[in-house]
Image (tube, rainbow, N blue to C red; front, side, top):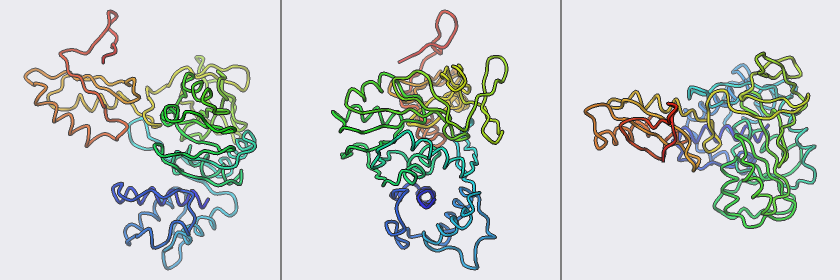
Length: 377
């Protein structure tokens, strides 16, 4: 729990400082993140407390006359509340409208998921984390799982030497694995990879294993549910985690029910294979993955259509894993005058993952003979 607390504090401090604060490892100890090293003023300390209270579902009734002033005191606050094993953790999803949604999870369920996954990963000596611990995927794989395995966590940066060793478990998202496939000529023996936060391309998985990666585990889940199912490449089907079973919804659709009877929608259309297996067919909500984040191209297109001087717009995923946009100027507006307006709106209104990297202007959206939107370059 202490690892997760440090991750939430670090993320909140980075937000308050406009991204200027270096992100310390989320699993750092109270010694590694020195109390004076955080350099918090009173307002920043209050914001950090608020972030922790939201994440761990705490309230001010547990505070004394003085607010916690050190990382150690924050951790004691959290552990006192969660000591009975009945606590909950809240994370934020990206949200289908661009607004994050709060997703609450029982700590006991997340811990059980970590214990099960640990049973599938014998012989691990270290977790090499390429993802932050304050999101659902990172929380389970870089905070809870290492505690179950009893192993240390390191947090290298892609683009520097990873210095992998036998027994490592590398945790990343598909875009990071794509980069690793190009940067790493040969993996050491007995290195296992974990990928989640988006579908992992079978060709990429094969390339990684050809470079010596022992196994590549692909985890399917969401912020609302945590892990749902997993597969070991090159398997086609995913196996459900023990706490889930599929529930028919009618019209060939499926939902989820957990061990407590809680019901959840699946983020994708699936095909059920037997009682405990599924195959992904396609997302329900039109989202795509950009840098491990859910992004909704139609939301971006709607923002562009709302700008003065734009008659129509379409947005889709480019071959480089980023968005691209096709823009139709309104009558009387030329590209030279629109370009600065579009660039400014993209920068001010969209997150980094949502920003189209390629803009093309034309008199009409490209469509095929059937009238459906056609791809463009």
